[in-house]
Length: 298
Length: 339
Image 1 (cartoon, each protein chain N blue to C red):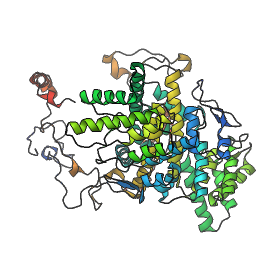
Image 2: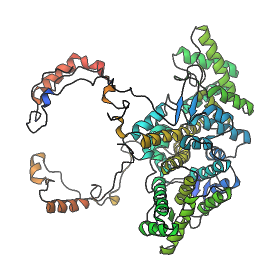
Image 3: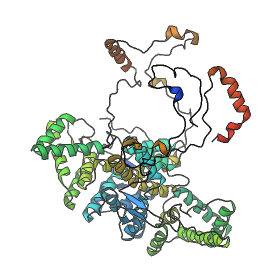
Image 4: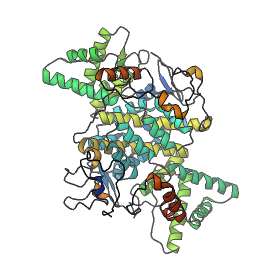
């Protein structure tokens, strides 16, 4: 049997022989036999080190709280994709791919923190001062401060504050939590000064802060959060695959289905006649010159 | 909308149509008020402004009580808190599933990374590597279920059923028995761990019978492989084949994330059109002149056949062009209970 990989690379992550699979120098089977946890293994994968007990506990907490979020873009994607009954991994992949600039933007939050910490260091500012700068610059520019606000949990994300507290309880509140706490303080103060409503910290602001304080890079943290969510999205996809009706449009179901035609609300151009090919050029020219179409361009 | 007067277009006034196309209405469908409107229906989880609740458990309370994602996989997929031994077994399995060197999920992740994408695209792409050959947990698990149903319903012994399965599927990548782990003890250690933790059940027992049956008839040495070990352990932990398929594929996706990062750190991006394919790798039709468009009908050979014999002959000829798809025959199944 051909056992050469399809893709050759020099890699510092792992190797696999007929005898063993080794990640960052540790035989995976030996790690499991020794009683290390899956969370420990993720530290080894992304950081090449065995974590302290407190760090391991923090990661366990973070992954547990981030895994399930019920009705969110990621779960909605998984459910939509499985409606066509492709292979299950397709729906799971789609769910993880929903994570971008808004849904769980862990990497972006991490890069933001690193940028301002470095700036504070270079400019000789305290963490509190650089946090105020961060908040003012974002809000002055009309941009949301990453890590703040959650559209569904309007009075405070149930996962966020407890994560901060857990980090403090475990005494692993490093420079990132200090910065995040200071960002939240200045963010709340400014909104209060401007007479605006309370917007709490969200799970990215809390959990990604913890991940950074326990040594994960922005992208590693993003990976951990996004992929953890994949598990629950798989459950939502399987539930719909096994208990729901394919295509999600049947009129035989007691409830209107997700893709029922009656749910379409169309607000585009009025119905119009298709021009013949003989009419086409003149029609197209007029259409282009009128410019009416431009308001529909997306 | 709905009353647009139109002239006839193309074949749309053909009497062969079962309807008069020109009179078909425009306009959206009115709201269906005879049934309750669409709602997000789920047995898995809900949330409100204040809480996220999975199978009845508040997820923040779960983690505050010391449960982790390994426990919560049991909650989400099985609606129960696992025994400590079950959590330990799943934890063990997930460590083994995390990395596998430059395997297909890692390769897919790295290829996607080369296009300067988000990390999440690469992680998602890695999951697409899991099918019915690589990481065939759905196929393997459903085979176990069907086999054990035969044992229970038809009064056969496990060995009898295992022998029949092996006879039919000895070379099937979803058998769970192969030559892949002859020198690596990890798969057998996993079964030993399941025994030690007291979580081994009928699926592990039957898989051991599969191994024994395969070893009896295989011309080459074979043994339990990681698919068989992982799949059987997951089933004995109560996970369905589909849940197993997803959980293992997602677990590998963490490793794929590290491969994405390393690819970006150590390698360069690839531009559209950058990669060449040597003619040494090409064994298709010889290079040929493009005929003038005006002469198209002199050169073009129509695909239509009009007799069954002609159809068969054309079909077999088309199989010879690799990449045409005619040599592949597969069954696309509908796993739905309701379609």
